[in-house]
Structures are given as C-alpha cells and as structure tokens.
Length: 62
Image (cartoon, rainbow, N blue to C red; front, side, top):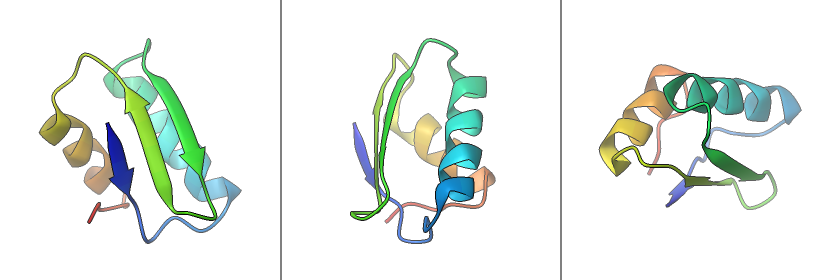
C-alpha cells in the first residue's frame, strides 16, 4: 500500500516514520521516497491501521 505524506521532508522524518511502522509490524517492508513524499508499506496490517500509525507519528497522510 502506498501513502502520500506531504509533511515528510528529510531523513529524520523518514526515520521517525520507519520506526513507527516497525513498531506496528516488525516484518513490514517499508520503502520511502522523500522527493515524491511517498511511503510504500508491505504489511499484513489494514490500511487504516497503518494510516493511523503515520498520523500518530506526526505525519498524516492525504
């Protein structure tokens, strides 16, 4: 699943997002494209659960 994360702008942001998603699912495959402001996640979690984790980390999706 892919998310647009417009507030993500630097390596620190990417680290915070990665950590939040790994806490949700340690086996998740996470790919971050900073220039495009996109996060791609392969996980067994539901889309809304992942979106909530991103929002709670301070990076709401659109």
